[in-house]
Length: 89
Image 1 (cartoon, one colour):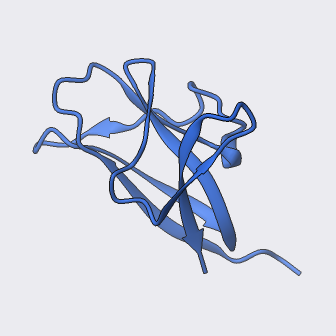
Image 2: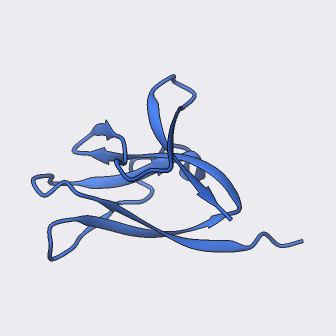
């Protein structure tokens, strides 16, 4: 059976940043996989289609792993770094 994908908006408030990307389980924590776009209000945004389940993720703000203050929870990645958690249902 095909997995149902749900669009999830990720927003990072980092007005001074020169680059922000979304890293997580869904892209093998690859900093180049999902660069975020800066909006007119200076926030950075990307929409990802994620399958059902819990996904670990973080923002990479100018190379610095950054938690999402609006995340549903905090967990750890495989390198024992604190990362954010998003449930998708």
